[in-house]
Length: 308
Image 1 (cartoon, rainbow, N blue to C red):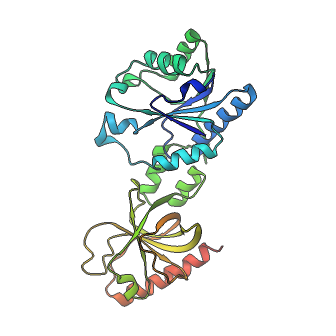
Image 2: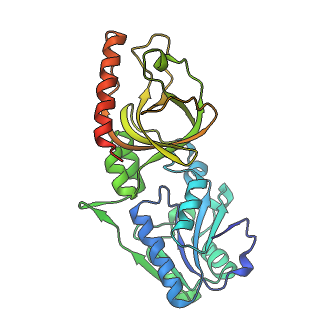
Image 3: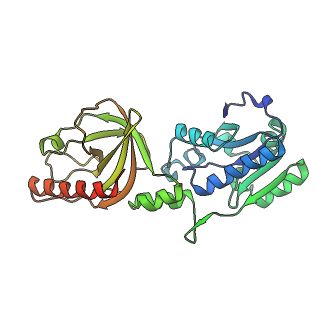
């Protein structure tokens, strides 16, 4: 897949099959749209193209209301490529861009720049100043400018519409298993292993502390997970919270993984945590011994859940 920024390389594109959107999380609904675009492009002998924005428009239009992103840009680009798309346009989203009339956007970006053959969008897509560019408005412009528009209906799972906002709600509530079902993969966060206070090692359950720039961290609590580093996957019990039983830990939220059957120190290594299931809330225990006993139970339960 070729990634295009600031218009460079547009001349290579000839009449693509296009989809427009933010595609945060690339959940099952998004995947359905991208697979359809890829399929149509092959049938027509045209390139497939995803047109999206960087940064997310809400971060420019209303930063305080901007939701935490489900995935970072690098992961989004990688996943779009896996889904068989030929071109990805990362349009720079600015306040000036946001003020453009939807007709201007269509004429300049879809018609003059890439001469779109077909445009495929989700049922609730809207674009342009004040989101005036509704699906119906886009259809009207298609007749004027000579391309076709197809609408993909909402994707439902267990009777509910799959959406990025729904995924965020589930993760905020700690429902990582349900969120992963909507994503079509385990929800994960990435970062670098940093040195902690070695409290876990002292009580017999050493942890790898993750420093992450991921915007969406699941609800505080204890989870079963897989951790990956050096291209190898390991089973783990992950705690998200402040470790209230241990004095002096402060109020800062930390993400720490006790990797099962693993003794090495991996400070400075890049690590990915893929959440499988939430075990329990984070609890303040009366003593370190009670905490140790509970962690031992968590590990035993995790072994049963994470059978490889």
